[in-house]
Image (cartoon, rainbow, N blue to C red):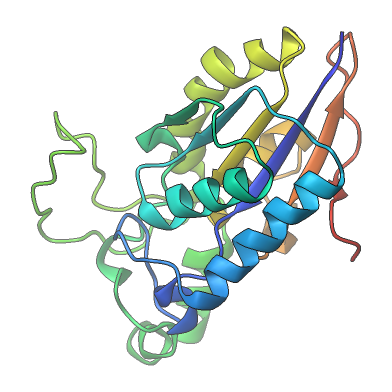
Length: 224
């Protein structure tokens, strides 16, 4: 029994629009972001893709995107599971900073390394503000993409992968970095080559798994 998996990066957020680093900061979608989510939902409906469960982060830009997709695809009734493990990578002291300002402050090469490298960690945030979503000090002060991958994989291995193996179709609505980390793992992309993978807002990616859990190559639901 096979199953399919669709990955969606949330629609445009106010931070995307303003070219800011976001991470775990909880910013809303723009009108354009809502429209992108609506198109994803319409595309899923048109292609008759039916899901057994949806997985998203604790951040409203992903949650709202997921809700719009489900509404537009007439699947609002299916279970939604939220986990901090799908949160965007934590950008530390860069969060809230305009990317051009960060380049002016730290240098173009340094910022490029923090953004695209697998192992580079951005400057740590000095102090974390208490947030009841994240008890027991689970919020990091900054993360590399590798660190985001390490906290993401237990959720994939314990929740999503077993569901797919049981023939249940899964939808993940998350963030650019966490989806890059997951695709790196699924496709066995090297630490160096992951630098070249860019995931657009509201650009759904489709994988099919056969009965032996062999995965198809990456397909985009909207033609590139």
